[in-house]
Length: 533
Image (cartoon, one colour):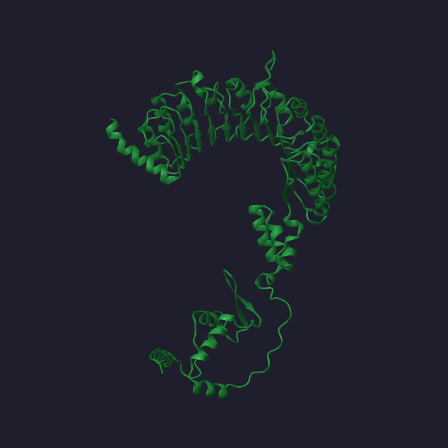
């Protein structure tokens, strides 16, 4: 015998197990611990989990069968013969059932699977998850087909943005699919968004009116061809519809006015794009056709409209007394003069958010702001970015006492204006206990005035720390000592913008996000204070 063959034979003899013994792996040990024989349970292994299920277990895995065969090969011939004689002859195994094993996914109860799918849909929406899950197995297809999961849908043609003929064909193809989907999947639809529909908006909304009686929210983005009859038909067929968003869509004012006259008493939210036809829609709102309206947003489109919007404040307060959110975004807004006899309106007693932000200089003054907010004690958010005529004294006279977000930033326009240099402390002293976000970007307050204003956030001994978590001081005259004092006094500060602050040392003029970066800024400022003094 060759020396190599002799060494291999000796290794086989030394590594041989006793007769009747079987090599046990870690997998066998877990198998016996989690589902011992005779317990009525068996262990099922998948890619990322182990399931203990009742009932008889499946056949042993392929790995265990290979290990048993390998153990028998390692035994000497005599031991193998004696073990074969001693082992009783097993009864013939029943023939396995035809068809593949459905696996653990097919054994989950339908109710639990619906709850799991509901969590995923709530986080990421129904598509594309439900479409992919329906192709896994029959049980998953049944669960993914439940109309209760299809409560929020966004529909857009696949060829949006291409040639007109190709887009029309794509919309017609999607429409053919919707004729089956609407009654079979979307019967409990609540929120629908249509994007980039150019020619088939009317047929789609007709299907919605026939199959989706629970619709509550409709958004049309970059859609054309919406007729007055379409929206009125939808308002009659969907008695729960209370929110309409038609920003950046070609919709006639008569269509919107007719819709508001039909669904006005139940309308809660309305989003509009300012154009020459917006006046008619606002006239309907001023006429109290939507007394329960809570959210009103009017913004400019891609092509900016330079025509000023004149809005009678007092008439809007009477027409929409339940308004909670008012946004006039990027508009040249001019409040209509009250006339010779000044009669203050009822105000907005429920208003919580007012946004008058714009990218250019606004004509909003302290007097106009007072007319808007004189009856709004519950205001939480005030966004006046671009409103350079608003002064700290005018803000201090507002009736709201629990303001949480105040945005007064001036972006790209502070060089051409004469700004106030004093008065910032009036803002922080009034709302230091409730203010969470403060934006003073581009304001012209002096170093001493900013130091006095931000010093009010210093926590008093035994009192609760300030709620301030975001400060934007971009382009201001804030000093290193003032910044370090704010960071030290506000432990919950998560955002600090110090870009273009001329009084700060180089290397620190940037935005800081997160507590780690803010604390690093504090360390750098503390080390630079002695040298700067």
